[in-house]
Amino acid sequence: MLKSEVGSRRVKSGCRLLLTLSQVLISVVFSAMPLVAQTQDQSVKERKLITRVEPEYPETLKRLYIGGVVRVEVLVDPSGVVKSTKLLGGSPILGQSTMKAIKHWRYAPAASNETLTVKVEFDSHR
Image (tube, rainbow, N blue to C red):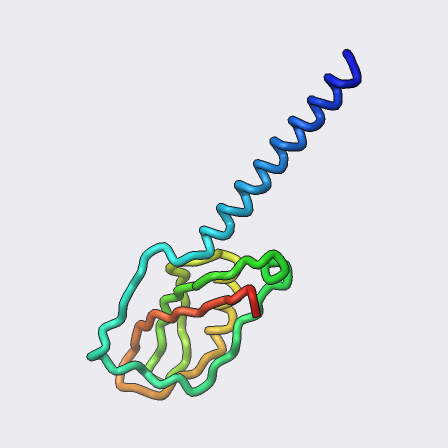
């Protein structure tokens, strides 16, 4: 095999690898976007948030400028304690960080359990 053929194969192999990595990065970026746009009824009064812990933004994702919006369903008991969280949309990695932080949030007391939808934005350019 000639040297030029070997070099050509290496270039093609490198291009295929770069294309594959680009496709993976694009899929990660788009998975960070919310899956379904959801609006909240403005006539329903929001439960007041007393204590908010900010989620940790993984340094790797921040460095790669991967951000987006994470939507989480939150079940709050009458005393204001977060009982459970469920990821509704967004990056799974950012979602885990968000749900971990939300479990430390505290809301104002209310008469019954309440299910809320929380949106948290991760801006990679800050």
